[in-house]
Length: 173
Image 1 (spheres, helix red, strand yellow):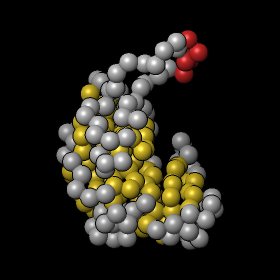
Image 2 (cartoon, helix red, strand yellow; image 1 turned 90 degrees about the vertical axis):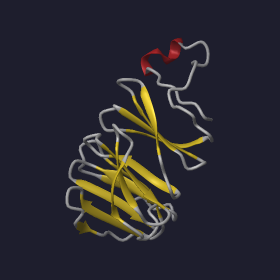
Image 3 (tube, one colour; image 1 turned 45 degrees about the vertical axis):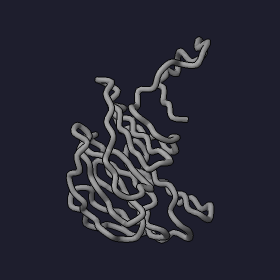
């Protein structure tokens, strides 16, 4: 589907018809992944056509991020000021959420990035069978746990004390 609706869970039982409209502008293909920022200010949508649109839930405005290569993973920084994307060419890029402009490419031409997750202190990057835990501010590597299969998903607990990872073997780390 090319539509996203912001719904209040408390009023879902009163919903009699499909909501009208789509807050995300100009989607050219179906959405394959949705994410929220940590404080719910931003929604990000990745489409099958490799388009990312971010939507500000406060002022109800959206913008398209101008991607050049196939994005496989994306997440918002914990402070909601940046969108981080990881692509098939192994590039980690940071984008300004207000302007939609590329800020920097701190990792270039590594292994394909398949998963990302961030906290105020840590950045987790899945690169095939490699899981890298970095300091979010310096990008210094802190740990590299071993995975049995290709990293598919990463998510930190809300307080950042746990990292969950799934891989192609079905293993949950």
